[in-house]
Length: 392
Image (cartoon, rainbow, N blue to C red; front, side):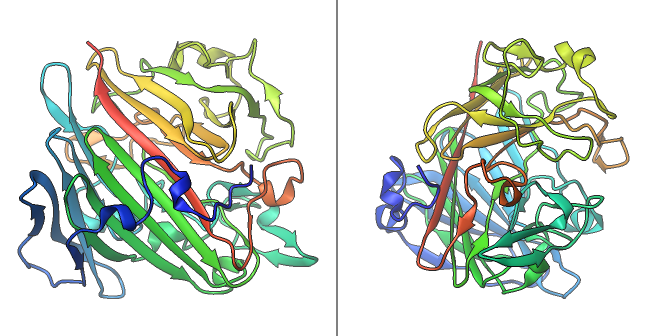
């Protein structure tokens, strides 16, 4: 099934704005020091979207911080700068609540540079070899920012853009929609691309819905780059991982796929039976050692299905990932080196893991990979769900 879906009603739990016709609050920027605002409904008074000033961008625009919360006592903080999830707060088996993601509590540290903590990445998440591709007989040269390659949309990708926010009031769900129009030629990509990302907190699940349209044929691969640590501190090497994938895409020494769809059986990439993440590191090659690989999910592309589940045995917390995307990049924070600090936490190597739902890296140059081409008149629609819980 092709990834371009014309109707959001094909997703079982979301059908666009028609199912969440609620009190709509169009949010504009506010100045430093403005008091936080709260949007709530009497039907569910614990469902809230709060807005507060987060910081000023180099262009002197106000970035805001939005807090989604509900009766499950889950709190998610998101800034419209980069669409970044700055925090996901959940309780452990003893009732202690902490942030289970890596990130910062201020805009300044994000502006200073970071490894895509919590961000929306695009236009093209992951790598494109030699920073270029051909489409309909025309060659396109992209910004080079990862050796000879283009990574996560280029030098100033979607993670560094200020998105237009819209709070769609609380009823059953706490909903925040972010929109951005990427102009033709930005970072080398063709077409004026209108993108929206909708975050919805419903009970113990975070829905992320991506939509996009273009006026010229282009390539597109959107994902969220949240780093998780379900213990809230230390490393993730003792977390237990399951991945619903019988194949993966091997890579060369620049982390570009070779084009092969290899079987995971008999390799340290086989997580069809749950394994401790760090258990087989001594079987991996590469420097630094760790996982940074795309998995080919079992099941039909375009249909929502289980991608992965991770459990921290000590805290009891787990996160389960479902997606309509054909792949998921599993990354174990290999390049973290302790130089980034948030509060009393130093983000050392392997202090977080990512499960980036996606199309495959370098798909524009790999004819046998699922297509990432989006054409005028088509609607790109994709959805990923993160479910949070506790196993005793």
